[in-house]
Length: 232
Length: 232
DNA sequence: TTGAGATAGATTGGATCCATGATCGGATCC
DNA sequence: GGATCCGATCATGGATCCAATCTATCTCAA
Image 1: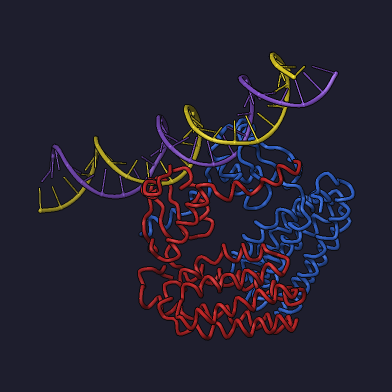
Image 2: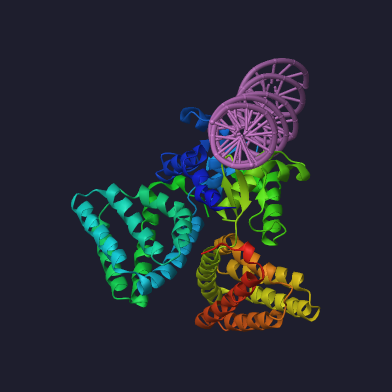
């Protein structure tokens, strides 16, 4: 396994069809364009994408691991209903990983990293002023990713991102309501301040508070769209 | 999506061929029967198992997500070299998830759960007396799984288990040396005591100490088998 | 009209086939 | 003798084919 080989590792996951299909389907599910409970068919998914069943199957297998679809042999594939337990699990995982990461980040981030986070917040403020929730979403993701990367454990981000599907789905369903937007920017500012001060405890507490806010909207969504939820 | 359908969910992941192949290959890699750097071929893997390339590809795709193999298109699939960074990532993830889980477990475990953990430790003591490292391994896994399950977030276990491949590989390579065995049993006892007392802080501290011990052997392995390791 | 049974259709799981591209070895030319 | 070019071989990625089986519908009889 020489260097030339190592240099090419990752290509397989980069531009291949299965990866694109996975990203497409995940986005469709998270935005509820493919609504919870919806029946999917590998053939019907493959045809409009202009691909065969093979990469679709690969994508669905990954989505099953994300618990975003359920595959029943000889019957069909279904978008999972929103499960309060799965949402709680996602919140648990994200809090565990990101809180631990932010402690490390507060201890070891460099000036360039702080600069990057500060620039991100400036952009968030602009998105807030423009009421541009979609841009804010991307910036929010980038903000948290940057924090995880500077902890030295980028894996924290990729796992958190992966587990986060259920939270994303709930959040997107509630997106039209953007009254929380300025509050979130403010929380991000507090978090950055704690990191800049190297205060791991404060950074963790700040992030924990921030993450838990996302959960607050789930009851509203459930009241509005009960058919999207599992019965307990 | 009625109940009959829901009742059958999971069968797809239970007895199917891809799952078996995944488990088999993972075990072979973790025990270094398929040594780091080894080139794998889908055809050569499929033939002795009596299956086609399809389930092998499915298994390899999952192992790639575990970072246990690297797939290079038109070239080959390779068992990844042991990467100190990947090992550290695995330790980070496990510590983050399990420490957070054990806090919840200490707060909410019931008598039956405590009984289960106590019985497990008795079995560990027997394995220790018999110098039966393999049995101890299974019991250790079961012990940690039980703790995670009683936190109410079994996901902590499945993700921890999944991310743990690199740690397992290092540990198995060092297994013949079982002088740590009695120490680990003792640490498990301390952990159980903290949980039984409902002392979340003590339980977390105890588990953290316990998990970090696993890392101690990596340098020995590297000295013994440098060709298994990535260069930094 | 209603019920049961058979049959047709559709679904995923697994196996096979083809396309693309990378490596390696031998033939050939300088 | 050595470098170069070309083709055979083999790798994964994607497409297609077959098998098993579950659902739904249609038919026929009571």
